[in-house]
Structures are given as C-alpha cells and as structure tokens.
Image (cartoon, rainbow, N blue to C red; front, side):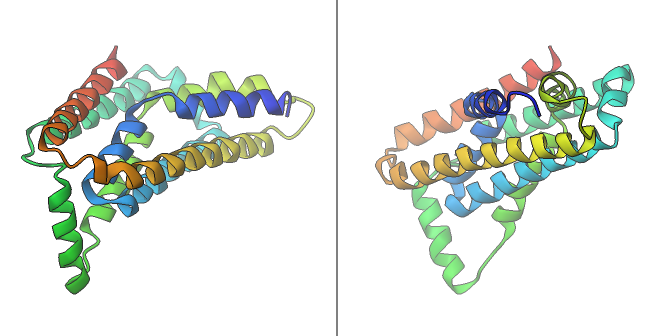
Length: 210
C-alpha cells in the first residue's frame, strides 16, 4: 500500500465528520444506553465489511457503472434514512432518559434484546444502502493501492483499517455520551434533540438523493 499514514489520517477524518452513522449512534445511545450504541457500531462494521467483500469481488465497480443498481441503492438508502427521521421526529419521548432507566429496571427481571437487535439492523442497513460507501471503495481507496502487489489483499487491508478506525472513533463517542447523558435530563433538551435528530436523518436522506 502507498502512503499508509496518509490513508489512516484521511480515514480518521472521514469517520469523525458528522454523518448519518453519527446521528444513529447518538440517537440509540441516548435512547437505549451504551449497549445499543455499541450494537449500532457493530451493524456499521457489518455494512463496511459487506462493501469490502463486494470490492474484492469486483462488484463495486459494476454497481458504480450501472445507473440502475447505483440509483436503486441510493434511493433505498435515502428512503430508509427518511423513514428513520420521520419516526424519530414524531415518536413521543423517544429520548426520555427516565424511560431509559425504567426500561433498564424492567430488563433486570425480563431481559429483552429488541432494542439491541433494532440498533444493529439500523447500523447495518444504513451502511449497506449508502451509495457514498461504494464511491469510497472505487475512488478513495484505489489511490493508496500499489499495483505491484495483490490488489484484493490490499483492498481487504484498507477496508479493515477503515472499519477499525471508524469503530474505534464511535466507541469513544458512545463512551462519552454514556457519561454525559445524566446531565441531559432536562425535558427541553430531550425534546429539542429528538426533533433535531429526526430532521438531520431526513436531511441526510435528502442529501443522499441529490
């Protein structure tokens, strides 16, 4: 691989830039706790692994060159983010920390994995249906590939590095959110954050189409 340090720095910057992943992780962490945030991250990593496999098989180029396939992914992804945004915006007390604590208390007597499974699926689907991820693999990664070495091996290595960096950054974010959420019990903040989260997800959905 060429310029590995430059790739790592660029991957870190891409991970830290606020996007749909950031919003989903914040929403699920504040709504259902740190474990839900980590499940969202696991889903995100699953999506990135999916696209790494697609790139190794050479299908990412096929998808990018096919107007139908690329647009199908783009509009499905936009529709999914729009759906999540509308659902969050109109859900009453979706980010109520008191409700979270009550649910945690109930889970002591009757453990439930519903929220964790849903968080994982949200992270997975939002990444698989993100057309910009395809572009990362066909425009960004090739710049760091050494043509004198095995291309597929380098794609796997670059994809793994990107996934590790993204997971590491988001785990830090979840840890920070889990520690400050007790300061965010004011109903006014909860309501504003809930509405803002819904609007941002809808905005990312619209931006995906444009």
